[in-house]
Length: 109
Image: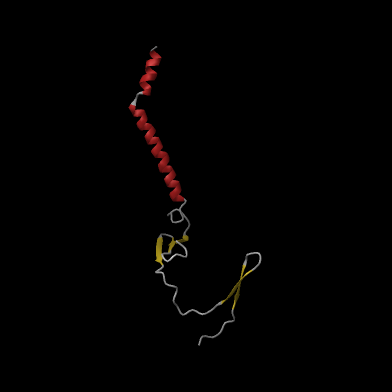
């Protein structure tokens, strides 16, 4: 009979529920740390990472991480403007590979 009273008192101890909550929070914190370590922009990740958010959309953003330095580039919705010249032609082969054929170098005018 004496052992049974101890078990009932053990089941009603409020501090045990607090200990269980602490265990749950420790598991949650460990999961968040693992998720952060797997992120491409994590400080523990690769040295150089380029991330494109909303590709092809007018509000596209390019994030470049080089070591500890992170740069953000945002599109303003306009197409690229510049003084570039055609550099060559790219062909898609039947197997899906791409072949780039550079044009002959011409002197600038």
